[in-house]
Image (cartoon, rainbow, N blue to C red; front, top):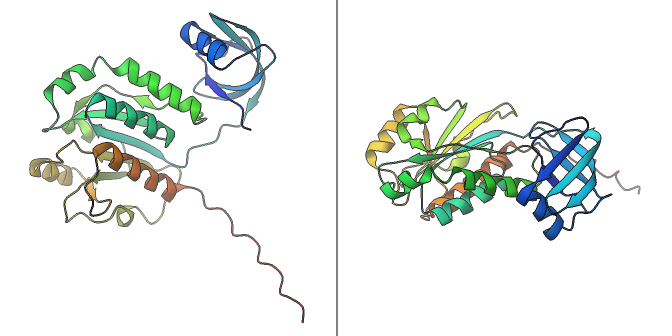
Length: 253
C-alpha cells in the first residue's frame, strides 16, 4: 500500500509542521500518530518523514531522507470557461488528479456575469480543493490556480501546443491535432468553452491567435466532462512508452 503524501509549507532544520485545520484533519480523520512514516512535499521536493508530534493543533515531521521527484510527462495548462461553481469545483478536483500544472479560469462572451464577478472571491477555496486532490492522487507538486481573466488574455499563455475544444461539426478529432513527436518539455494549453459553446467571433479570434480547434466526437458534452476527457487523452498521449516485453524463445521441436 502506498504511503500517504502531505504538502507542508516548508522544510526547516530537517523538519516540517502542519497546524490548524490541516493538523486537526490528520489527527482526527486520518489518525496520525507519532512514529508513522509518510511522504511530504514542500511543492519543490519530496521527502520521507516520520511524525514526531501529533495533537489537535500541531503535527510535526522529522525528515528521514530526500526522495526522487518524478517529472511530469507533459505540462498542461487548463484554461476553463467559468461555469456554475459546484461543477467548476468538481472540474478543479478531477483536473488536478489528471495532472494539470495550472488552472486558469476565463471569462467568455457567454459566461454569466454573476459568476465572473464572484469568481475572484473563490480562489482560496479552489486552491484548497486542488491541495486535497493533490494529496489524494499523490502528486509531487500543486497545480497553480490563477485568478480569472478574459479570453483575450489567453494570448499571454506560453505553450508549444494550443488546443481549443470545439463542439462544431467541422472540428477535427483531438488525436489528429496532437504533434507526432512529443516530449516531456512540451507545454500544452487546453482551452475549454462555456455552457452554450463558443461564439463564431471567439472561434475566429482563437484561430487567428494560433489555437487549433479540435473535437471529442459527435456527442455534445458538458463543459466539465469535455475538459476531463481531453485531459485524459493528452496525458495518455504523452505518457512514457514502456518497453516491449521480450518475446518468448521459440519452442524446440
